[in-house]
Image (cartoon, rainbow, N blue to C red; front, top):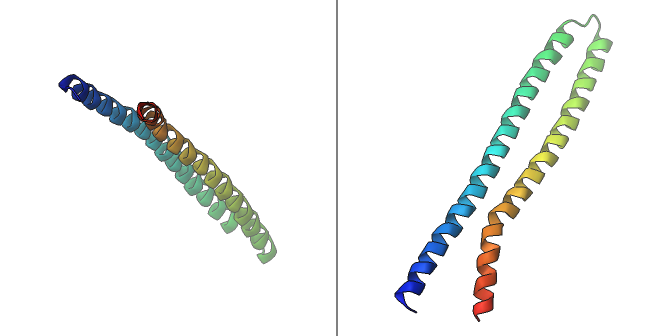
Length: 110
């Protein structure tokens, strides 16, 4: 290996690391924004639920309001978990892309 080859390898490695970091950063921001948005919606929904629950006139109505809230909260959580799962999957795919090309280069050198 010549010094030129070593220099190119170092440059390629740095480029690979920066591309991977860029993908990681973009995905991490998307995940953080999604979690913050869900948290805000969850707190707002909880506050609205408590207002509605406090305004009930009977135990039966209170149970009905509570059941509706629990059902909608569960459905919201499942939807959010699915969305976050997709974001994490995209994160893994995007983070791996820069290494795919590096692996292809190494494989052809053999």
